[in-house]
Image 1 (cartoon, one colour):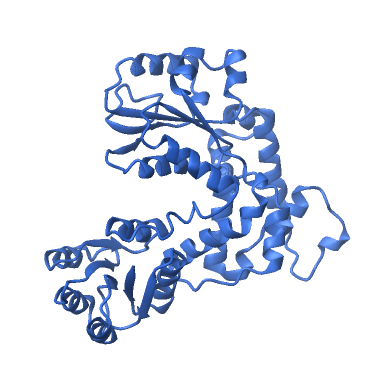
Image 2 (tube, rainbow, N blue to C red; image 1 turned 90 degrees about the vertical axis):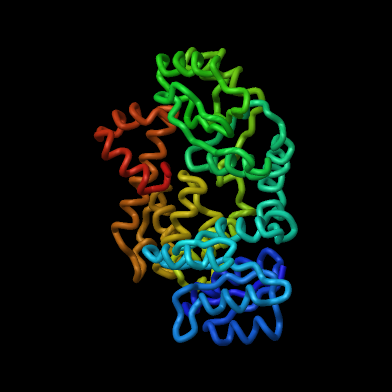
Length: 392
């Protein structure tokens, strides 16, 4: 699709354009309204993304010029929080949609897809070989099948994201809702995600079994859990009737440490998204960074990777702090650590993250038990788990 991106914030404009070009679109990037209007007349695009607040020629003028073309170009406007009234006015003038900054990669690509541009060559996820491609193929096969799906994977492996992808591949024609299976007695229509079913108490499991007997005919269930659910059924920790009701089809998400070949592309995608979110230029990913990605054990999986990308986007290369944490956490403590940029806090954080990982493993993912093993209160444990990417 031929797309024009207009934003007087050069970093934001270039980040958005890079995202669209990576999807195979023909993108022109301009930084002021006057140049955009001239370009519209000389080389009309099919779609325009434009900021509303620009001087001296603003996004409203760009919108008006785009809609006066024959045929009119579709326009998506974006603006800062608090300027929604302007966005509503733009919609009345013919804008197709509006976005509030900061804008995510998914928001950009979803708007293009809704306007017929699709995600060039399918989805960027589909273009990756190996695990990602195989997973997408599985989700595509299940997209139009009404059977309940059980998605299992370690904390941070993308279980909810996989459920969203399944919903998207099915056309997203119905609502997508994540509920608390321990509290919600009635489940809504559409795709309903039941997170961490294997961590429910026996009473909550019994209540959920009763709830599932009153299920609406237009409700599709997706449950998420840690690996090893069948063993928990055998051990009596998970009700067999609940498991076999929800696990009609099982999708297993591998941990990030088993996706070493994909780490560079996964990190780059997360970095581009974070830079677009904060309006920062995308820093180069060096060979040393990729080597550090491959060496790390990734206890927090994709969540940890996204946290790293966000730090790198905001702080630049100094935000990329995996290596010292990984070395300290794996016990390779020797005098070679004392380089010019040595920071004790980096190593202490790495050790703390490793202890959290060990406690979760020893407790088989039971956070209450892990807290007891570590001797910390529940709120402290939750804070630490979020800090190191074990929790969203």
